[in-house]
Length: 457
Image (tube, rainbow, N blue to C red; front, side, top):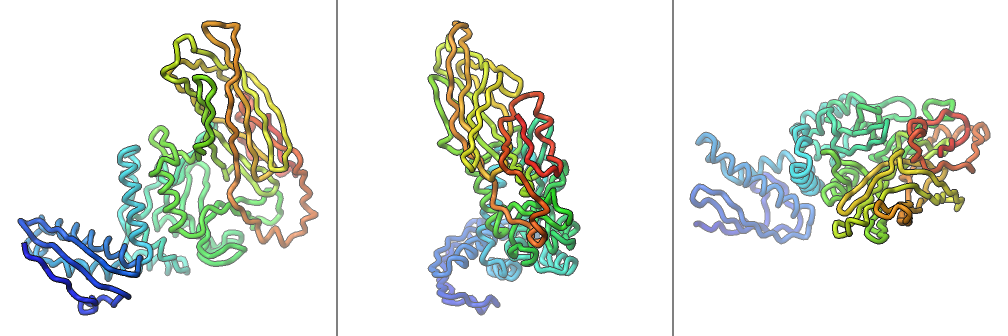
């Protein structure tokens, strides 16, 4: 095997601009029709180091593919491939390595956990396609957004959506990551959402997350948010915002990290956006109760203050428990506290209209919801069970305290310019536990602009 010596301190002779503190490269190359590269880089520029690694990895991949093609293509040198790749993707030197890793990690994870979602991903777009979209909407796209679409052009409008799902008894949300053409078609110029580009879309609820392409109407440039119309404003442009990211890079990579590290559960081949606090677990005897929570922006409003949360509870009996420990849930007790310190106690039979039986090794899970007129609150309590073998024996099982906090939000500048006296709101009344089966449909309706935060029990 022939060893190729270091090429020198600059790659300018290849037509690539010199980058600071660059000393390249030790390479191992062709042997037995296999192409491999061993790379040692000494750089102070971290972005370029990661980017160069990624480019050379792709160079190896492309050169290996060329071995299977026609002779003229097979003879293309690794240097030519590297130059071509750098010329095409060089503008994304700050983002490419990070986003490519995020996409690779996500695809690997989905391939193992929910493979049907992989088929909805679209191939990358070209620079010319992104330039055409910029000309169409009259705004520049941020480089991190462009870079991501050079890797994958979002996904098809299918269910389940790549950006997570949420389901209640009569409410379902699943967000697709929009491809560039669909996003451009939904670009907004109307007041309240001026110069905002949709990133996601739910075909069931119409919900989208938007990215602000300019600093207008109180938004920061490239900020990402859920829109939240002011339900009491006379001005339709009064749209509040629940902030979900400060840039596309941060928004996408933080979501991927939660998915691939198990922060979001996979349920029925879908990513569900429940957040589980590892400390939110309580064990009483042989029974363990854990809780995950989620905020639903599409059922919430800032004005009037109505913040909607759902929680998923898992009740599990140890598989090592004795058979005579089998029991049935009779009732629940909740102690609910809002951000003002107001406390309300709620008791009721069963959970969501059911009285589950728990036996060794069995797991029971259910989803319910609650609302607050404050931006945060917490719940805790206990379930009362009776033993199946000793029917006169009752005992309580602790439900750990779990907190619910809505995302950071911004109030519409259109509303701030109006007379706040027009909208007198009583914020003292809070909403509570909504386990009652017969009330579940009613609690999911977005309240009419009555000036009060509705109460559901």
